[in-house]
Structure formats: C-alpha cells, structure tokens
Image 1: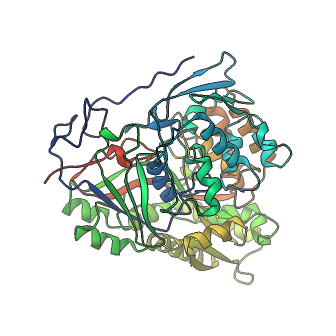
Image 2: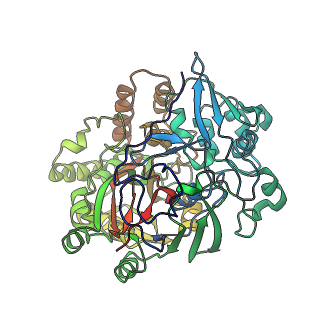
Length: 542
C-alpha cells in the first residue's frame, strides 16, 4: 500500500504551494487577496508552555509552538488531512506491520545540516528512554512500535526499538500489531526529530534560543518565561519560499478579560473569548467572533489511587456528584460559546465515532438531582455526615466560574462542601500527576482523530490516567479495539462502563471560541484537532 499525499484545493482557508516565491508578490498566490506589508501574527496563550523540546512538551500551547519550530514526518492541512512533512510519503507492508517512510532530500536543520532518517531514530529512542522520563513516552507505546513498552519499563535496551534508518532518506518502523491510524499519530510533537549533535552538546539547555536548532518553518528567537516567545521564519526550511508569516509572537496572558481588552486595542490577532461573552461579541464583531467544534473534552477526575479520599472509592458518591452537575447551566449561561454538554468522554466531533446512548443523558435534570440525592444518602452522607473534599483547577477565570458553579450545585442540592483551589499551570500538572489531589479539573485534546485518543486515557497503563482508575474490562476492550474491524461497538461498551463507574465527570466538549482578526487568513477552522501551523497563515492588507 502506498500513500499519495492529498492536498487541499485552493480555498480561502488554505495556503497551498505556489509556483514561485510568495514574498516577492503583493497578492496571495491562491486566493488573490492583497497581502499586508507586516506579516506578524500575535496571539494570546493562557499559560507558560511546558517545553519546546518535542520529546518533553505535554501541553497544547507548547505543541502549537513545537509544530512551528519542528517538522515531523507528516503534517495536516486545513481540513485535518495528512500531507507531506519531512516525508514525501510512505509504503505499508502486506501484513500492515511495517511502515517505510521516504524522506525528502531538501529538508535541512536551521544550522544548514541535512535532516536525515537517523535524526528521527534518535528522537524516537529518546522518547522511550527511561532516563529522559518523557511525559509522553506512553504515546510511543500506544503507537505499537516494536519493543517500546519493554524499553519504557526498563526491560530492554533503547536500541531494540523497532525503528531504523537503512539510509539517510529511509525510515523503517516496525509495529507489534496493525494500527490503521498510525500515520495520523506521526503528526504529534513527540515523534518530531531533534538534532542529535545539538542535544548532546547542550543537554537540558538545548532549547534555549541561543542554542536551539530546529527543522520547522520557524526558529525560536526569543523566550521570556511567563511573558512572551517569538519565532521567526527559518530561511533553511525546505519550503521557505512559500511561507508568508515572517514572525509569530505568543504572549502569555492569564486573564481572559485582559486578553480581550488587548485584542480590541489591536495588540493581538487572536484570543479566546471570555466565558459568557460570545453572544455579545458575535453581535458587535460578527466577522471576528467565531465558534467551531474542537476535538477536546472538559472533565473532572476523581483520585481513585491509594492517596485518594475513601469517599470517592464508592461509586454511588461519584455518580451522585456527576448527576447533580447541571451541564446546561455551564454551557449556556457560563460559557455561551456553542460548547455541547458532555455525558461521554469522547466528543461527537471525533471521526468515525457515534455517541452511544447514556442513561444520564436521557434524564431530565430534576430526575438526575433526585437520583443523586438517593445515591448519596445510600452511601451514608447527609446533614449529619456531610461529604467534604477539595477540588483543584489551573488558574483561569473560566475554570474558576465552572468550579464555583459546580460547588454551589453540590451544596444546594446535596449539602456537599467542596473547597476550591487554583494553581499555576506547571504546579497544577505536577500536583495532579502525583495524585496529590482529591478532585481535579482535566481536559484532553485529541492527539489524533480517533476515539482511542480519549478512551486510552482511562486504561490502567496510561501516563495521563491521573485518577489511577483501573478496570480490566476497559483495558481488554481498548486493547482489542486497536486491531478490530468494528471499533464503534467496542467504544460504545467502554463509554457505558465509564458512565456506570464514573471515574471522571464529563462536563462539556470544546468549541473553538475565538476573537480572530479579520486580517488573518488561512486559519484551519475545519480541522477539529486545531493543529495549526504559522506557515499556512497570512495577513491580509487592510
């Protein structure tokens, strides 16, 4: 089987390859729009990113930066379809267990070194190396790469990983089982190459602007933690002639309302819409306020580990808390940006996924509240023995509003006392990852567009199963889904188990709710993963 890249047709939302250098022209070569003289894109991010090291980054904001600085085997177009990156294509063996990628011969690192297949081998071995302790090492195991699981567990040497470079232009990947969505997974940052010589020379300091060498369309020229980062066009990038945006600036602004004020003052080209303000902004700025489906979920996770509260080990308590959350109030009154209520972990926007029937979803809120009271009473909690616990979230006005609303619902309906605490992003990740919490906010944006990217999170070995939920049936079902012809029936069963055991409380599924300057062209609103690349954007002349 041979993969032939499918490029998006020329539309307003896509930048495709032009016949000649774009920057010499005053018009966009595909859309015919006049281009602005200043091709700088400035956007707001909520928190300082975790890293710009492809094998260390673990958050959405950081991945957005890494996709600009580094390029993997494949990219995505404005519709989310696979298109060539460093690889021009791939072949698949008859047994569907071996992928052979052909790398382009004009890919270079920003220092002029050629990008070779060995750079991918080095990066992938680095990702599974227990010494690095990559927070995404489990993703490499999820990709079913030969021996990845044993290497991560410290049972085999890293050189046993099923990836090789027979020559500079050929990367061979061996799997332990067929995985139909494997090609989609190589658009993820963890699989991006790094320059071995630079990593070895500078160690943990290699990602600093003065040291970093990258192979993407941009280079990191400035980084002031918790304030700003700047990436500028990489002249060594193989397709630099067709890159229009010269400079992308990410500003860390923790407060959504401050960010909106700065957007309206012309300081930002894009920012998230503060909770509840979309209807007003859509009316006042119809060409700039946008909302579209995202491949992300928003939930709260119970700590079911040994360090978690005894109360949460009772499924009746978990179900009572989940039932009493009025999701409609959260989505319509607090957020008001088109976010759908969630009763499943997997969003409806997921490719090939049909939302199963969940009992809770079919009930009225009054019926849910009544059942919640009954369950909590059965579990032994009431006026004489009130349920109390702590719940944490990362600093954000929207997260705060949702947490406050949930705690008030529980108090008014069930007499539950929830104590709220917010934390800075990196601290929050550490606390949640160490199970040093009772109830914690969670959110997940799909690493690829298939339901397993969500449901695998609730399997026992998952690196991001922060609540340490463990169910042998879920583990077995998800293992079987990787090679099954009919995955929908499996995913339906998993979702029904989750709804019955309630290790998490699904709250809503995301929408991309942005203020986007009408001068920005090429934003991929039809890509539900929202894997965007500055190289595909452009600024339109006013």
